[in-house]
Length: 178
Image 1 (cartoon, rainbow, N blue to C red):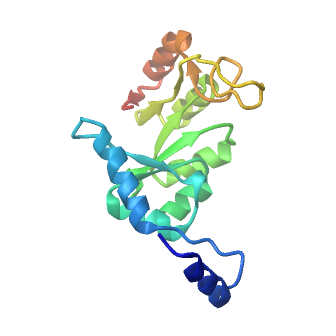
Image 2: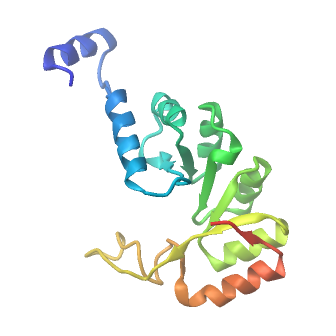
C-alpha cells in the first residue's frame, strides 16, 4: 500500500488528476477469483468497460485473462494490448450492422443477446460459432433503468425463447459454443 506522502510526490511529479493502481493487488485478486472455481478449464474475461487503462489490460493478459469487449473500439484496444482474437469475446448490445460487420472482420467470438441480432448475424455469417447470452429473468433494482434482468431489459434473451434461439441457429448452421 502506498503511503500518502508517496502519492503526493507522484502527483507533484506527474500532475493531477492522477490515477495510481496497485498491479500486485490486481494480479492477486485475479488469481483469487480464478482459483475460486474448481474447474481446470475456467476462463475469465475482463469486462474492459470497467477500466480501459492499457497497462491494466496488459497486466491481465499476462495473468491469462481474456477480454469482454462491447464495441469495435474495445476490440481494437484489446488487440493493441496484445490479446489474440481468440481471447476476445464480443458481447453484443444494441449495435449497428456496420459495427457487427467490423467486429466480424476482426474474427472475434460473438456473445449475442437478442433474437433479432442472432437472426442478422446468422444471415451474414452462417456456419460460424457463437455464444448466446441468456437472461434468467431475475429482476432486481428499484428503478427500471438499472434493472439487468427481465424481458424488458437489453441484457440477454429470456429463457422461454430458447426454442427460437435453437431454430435460428439451425437455420443458419450456427454452432453454440457458450
